[in-house]
Length: 476
RNA sequence: GGCGGCGUGGCCGAGUGGCUUAGGCAAGGGCCUGCAAAGCCCUGUACCCGGGUUCGAUUCCCGGCGCCGCCUCCA
Image (cartoon, rainbow, N blue to C red; front, side, top):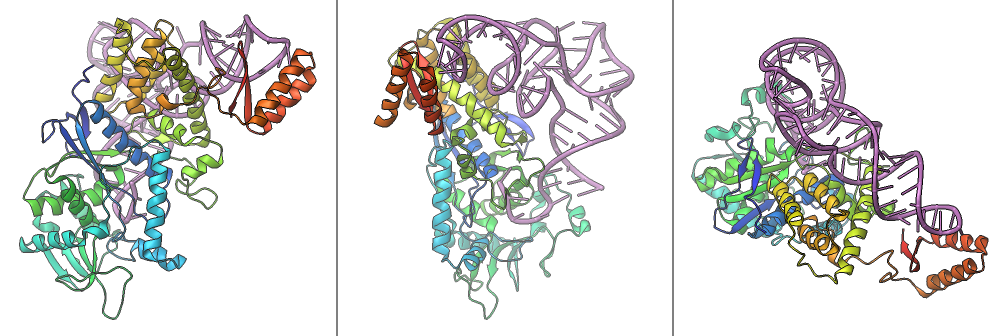
């Protein structure tokens, strides 16, 4: 099966364009990663899922992918543009932990959350603090080329030296100035200018600071991404992903500094931005004072993979309505899909060769065509649903297709435990004994006892499924 | 104020100028079952409002109403 040529939406050109790799057969992806001063909410996970989807589709299409996701552990300011404290430092000050403790803890939490929603490990996962020298070097380069100026607060990028500055996001720089809504560092020449290196004020000692040609301080947020991306992927870069919120400031600034430093345009071939999760009335990031995270789902008995299924149900460039009920519904759909897949899988002993029937290959083609068309996961998922319960396809074709599809869907269908078939369900002895007891009761027509046992097992989280081959249980 | 997007059947959510039930969840009917559950089969004729273009628009254009996001750290 050959996957059709891949087309992706490029924010810069505002259009879906063919993916044309810089190096034949290879694809480099840079994804803006987490700032590790606290938990990553489910909206952040959508960002990870979108990048993971992209990476899986490219790999399925045969590209050798290098997926880079950075860890921001310094430089991300807590408040207005170029003002306020570093987020990590602020968190450390709040909890009394060391910076290392904070960043380690939240980095691990993030990695765990990614895994739980089925994201593959990035090939590279660089940390900003491991790239300080490179960041200083980039600022020096920009300085040598006349794109910077130094004020008491730090070294700033002079956007006036980059005529294309407003193009990427369609900015109106005069308006930006006129609205006066941007809190400014006093001496900045233009509101859009941004910090490349923040200087530590005299008499102050920061938890994280480094010497530089301009004095002690720490790097600006934007420059880290340019440096880590370049270190990992060189330039230009095939694809850079992130949330739509980054278009205006973060990515615009990354482009400015990178294109000036590298004398290159475009620095990034395709910019992909996902839309936000819409949580309606509730605060997106808050739920009873807590951030909406992967564990918020687990606490409600929702499989984190249900969130992956939920994510795939909507297109990444569309805002997606979030409620727990919707994710639960996705979980139900995922469970059913898995049951069908597993039944087909076990019927053919895991053989993925299929029969190559016309209908099967037709569906296979439609599935990959959907994904090749700017990652249309909802359409692809619909085809997977159709395949799972298609009456015309035999088990061999159903499993052949679903196993193939799962390279991108990422539900782990090949390893999913058999349920409801009476085989493979792992239960402890006590549960098995109760099940046998119920069978005895049923045989004796003592249905009151049988139903009582069923209720008790249900209370313990086991759902009884009676089949022609006898009863079995599964976690509910 | 500037920029971007959205309004599809109970809910979510694809999609298209006229074949075509997108798909999921929920709901109703049926089969199965000691009763359930699970599973399977069947069912719903949707496209914000008003104009326009067209042989024909949910899909194109204009206007209106409503909603959301970004512009400030932010996925």
